[in-house]
Length: 353
Image (cartoon, rainbow, N blue to C red; front, side, top):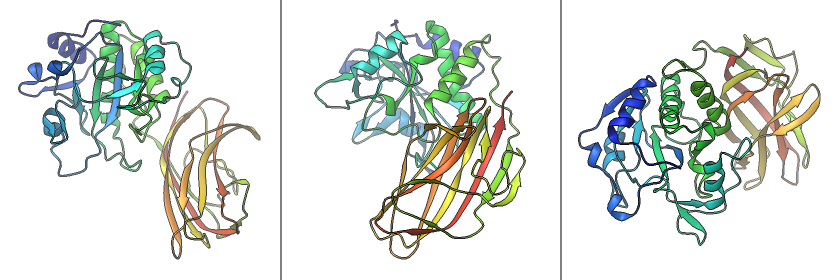
């Protein structure tokens, strides 16, 4: 809990952390304070903008739109890594959310993730997040495929660390919009637990010294040898028998593991199914193993059958701890077997010490 930073203190904190800052004209008096309280503040919320090329995204976040007046955040962090300050005070970014999440953020009392949210804007138990959180709107289509350039991701971490450092907060004062409202999915494309670890790494150093991950990732490109049958009703790991590139050396010939920790990776797997009935579902998920022992599962992506062949691209983004390996597993929920005609994996892997 804290009194909000003045505009001057916010700018100073961001620049001390090494952020490239653009002060949009009029931002220091651009706010929604006439609609409700601003503060005490408890944390920083991360969003994606759901915008693509051709959108003046900074203008959008500053002014808002017909359905939601601006500012839509404290600032907009564009793909070039610039922090554009768009609002000083209450902004229309968080909306209603879960009081249990707010209490966990205030106490920084949760584990890897805050408690599951069961509220949203307008629900009976929702609390006002616009009064309590700074907000970064981060330029991205939000489709799980649009990449997060390293310079942008590092800027998001640094901008968040700057506010946390100024208030004396730890990394658990940073949450994603999807952790606040059960209506939201942002930010899509990176994991908030990994993000908080990076904020922790930045806060462990003097301001301005954290530089992010190794900018030279290793390239992994694997595929199946040919079509194979996927029976209904059981999770089955994809076996990658074709290896076009594996600089990491983590993939054994014909094996299912594509990355081993400690490492961080980002990419996708392209899937093609034959014989999946229209409307039937195949689920895909990443699963962590320690040796041959299954240890953890990650969120499910559902692939719905269409007429003819069914195609899907599943994003793969995660940080793996030491001793863990990652596989991709499929679950055929149709009543009949289907054919996995092809699976092509392409990821960039940052090996960690």
